[in-house]
Image (cartoon, rainbow, N blue to C red):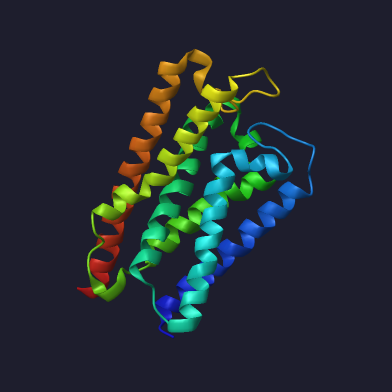
Amino acid sequence: MPKNLRLTFVFNLLITVLVIAGMVIIFTRTGRSGILLSGGWLSLRYYTTLSNVFCGLTGLLTCIRILRSGRITRPLFAGKLMTAAATGLTFLVVLLFFGPLYGLRFMYMGSNFLFHLVVPLLALVDFFLLAFPDGQKIPFRFTLLAAVPTVVYGACYAVNLFVNGIGEWPYSNDWYGFVNWGYPVGFTIFGCFVLVTWLFSCLLRGVNHLVHKKRTS
C-alpha cells in the first residue's frame, strides 16, 4: 500500500473512532442537554451531529475501500469533499457565530469538543492529503454537490417549522434560534450557510489542487 494511502487510512480510521466515541458520549448522557447539545436520539436534529456521523460513515467506507482495492473512487472522493465542507461549516459557524454568542468554552464541552473541533480539523487535513483518482483535477460540479447536505438540512428544518410551528423553549422547533428575528431573516441565514458551504468547498478544491500540484511538479 502506497504511503499516501496508508496515511489516508490512518486519518479515516481515527475519524471513524472519534465519531463513534462522540456518539457514545451523547447516548450515555441521555436526558441531559446543554447549549446546542442534546442526549440520545434528539441529538440527531443538529447539523453538527448529522455532519459528523456522515463524516464517520464516509471515513469507514474509505477504510474498507482502501483495504479491499487500495484505491479511492470518484464517488467516494465526492463524499470526502461533502463531509469536509459540512464539518468545516460546523467549525466555522461555531468559531465565528455561536462561539461569540454563547461563549467558546460552552461550544467545546463533551462530545462537541470532538464534533465542533477535532473531527472537522481531521477531515480538512485528510482531504488536503487525498489525491483525486488518476491524478486528474477535481471536477467543479463536486463543489455543488458539497452544498447539498446543507440545502437538505435547511429544507427539512423549514418544513418542520411550517408543519409543527416554532413552539416554546425548551421544546422549540427552532433550536438554533434562526427565526427569532422573523422567517425572512432565518431563511437569509440559511441561504448564507449554503453559500458559505459552497465557497468553502471551492476553497478546499483549490487547496487540494495546490497541494498535489506541488507534489507532482
